[in-house]
Image (cartoon, rainbow, N blue to C red; front, side, top):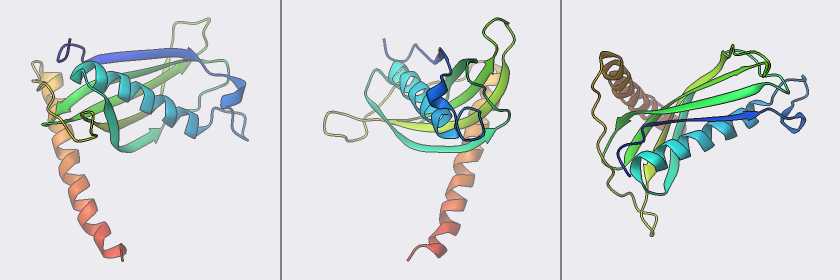
Length: 158
């Protein structure tokens, strides 16, 4: 049911096909996993098909090794009329251990669309805890910063 499923965690093993020339998991593979988790989270919250509108602030903190168990946790941290800001944490570690370390963090904005591909209304998410209020406030500040960066970038577009 829409408006109830706020978070999801995808888990899987990294494979040799995910490796880069340095022997670690390729950043592009991690970005694909992030997009998949963001979609699953947004679709679960909205109950609708969603598209990626923005992915930013991607921080690659530690490498992921082939054979690691990877957990991609996605959580709604702000909703607009049709958009959802999804906070993503990627953690990885040896599958024989319970310890997972943060490898990547970012924010993804997903937009719910109707059958014609037009943005469509979604349920509002209202933060209840102090932590969730901080996450929402951070999403609002990031929205403002993206607007200012976009305004600056206009000088570079012909």
